[in-house]
Image (cartoon, helix red, strand yellow):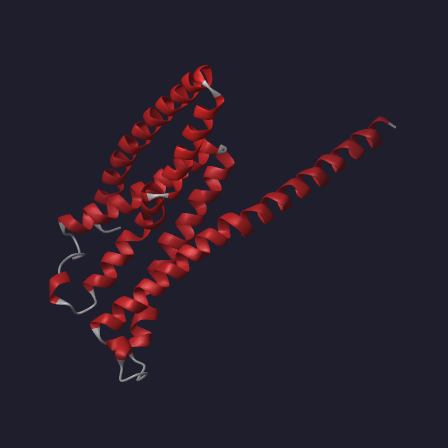
Length: 215
């Protein structure tokens, strides 16, 4: 494994611990605020809950959604051919290490948030989905997709120009984010249902086996 990946992992874990700690602190403050509001009036509780939801759907939600892909976006800009972005994601550079650390931290942030707001299994599923679609998939798809489109002579070779390369990379990132949403909304419920059915079948089989042994 390249040294900058190792450095990024350690930096990401350190940054994530700070983020998670701050998140828990903020969550505690919010819970205390809700408790105090309940003593005042139920209307204040509703307004506070709406504010919490707004945080998840606003700027914080935007960061949680797109930061896991920031390293891929930086890679797209690095290889776009525009001089202004040259060296932004250079191998073994400080800025690359920082960008990788931010991406890793945001994945851990999403996982911790899902586990805290729902349960540990939901957090595990969330982390697995992000690992699949914001780490493994871009690693193996980004270069073939961007370079493959660049070889096309469509519209005067637009995809071989800087703006075309950026557009194709951004389109792939958006498609992978859609895959993350589909994973959360569709695939995970199917997997959980399959797990519960399998667990029920195994439990039923064990029960029948015990009855058979007793007879």
